[in-house]
Image 1 (cartoon, rainbow over the protein chains, first blue to last red):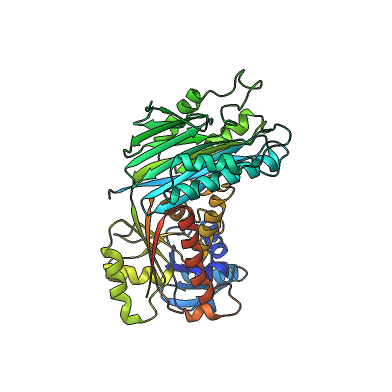
Image 2: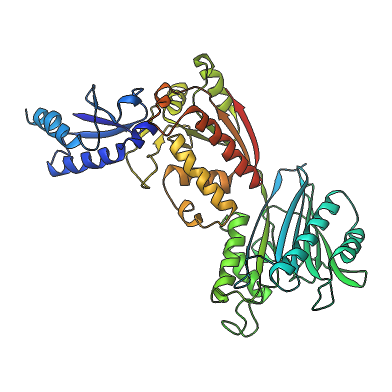
Length: 81
Length: 390
């Protein structure tokens, strides 16, 4: 599974750094280093919806506050399934 | 015309408790390849010294830039300077470094510590001819320039540093030369070298300078072009034209901006690889494209570069951050401030629709202002700037 986080200007201001850090922690905590690849990208062209991330090719909009529940719902369940 | 140019930087510290500096440095560009630098040190310290040195350096630099003779400059100063009521004399010492067509340095010294010339890593002893103008003993030297020559002019506050504290007789000029010759090899800018010298003096004074101290460094170096791409063009059809102009230029290439770097990567037909390493808290990570020397985010990074540029023109206190930082802004700073002498900006005027949200601290006007502010700062650093809009 590949998670890509936008690190462009807009998403940066909206907290993509915190999102990246939380994802790094969550991946480590759940021992998913092998299953989940984390990457960055510049602008996805949807700045209004930032922080923009994609899981495989599906687009999602998250914030530093929602990323943990997002991870539980959309990443953990899928990886374990 | 050769491919040399002069990088000039200076720094002063004030006599303890004084708000004004009694030393003054004036730099006047005569033309693209000739410049006049005057360092004057007024008698005493505080307001009086500041007036004397400001007048002296302004008068000399303006008159010399207009092509008047040294004799006329000196007599004018003698006739113009106000006479000190306590000491009954009008007095300001001065050092003139006149770079002519980037080929020759004419050095004229009156009562300041001798200008140090570091050539090939050694303290170079140049010929000094004594002149007598208006009963003033003035030393004049004419030196053909070589690449990497570093001239260091000082006020007497530098060799007097540490008298009675660290050294019995202060920091001797020869010892200053020894200290500086190690540093000139590393590739620091003139501003940084001057800052390091004056900071060392301040330390020797125990951070309570007993005199104003100023160092001015003129470093002769090769011209180094640098190209910076910022923002996509207003018209999509111009992408290829903008990219081919940008990439055909000699020198290193910096690409700033997310969309911009995607366009560059597409043009070069190479993958764009963003990193996720946050080297510094508030600057977005950089990226890599084969064939581009540096790829960074746009507005936030450039904004930081401007903050560093302004500081470097003033107090130069953030130097320690950008000189070693690995974030995008620090990397750009080192390339623009230290490496480059001629910078070409390729600025795209596309409006990013996503940035037109009032909730975001980014908008089109800010972006255009950033370019202007940055090029202003760089001009003040003595860089040649060319901006092309697309």
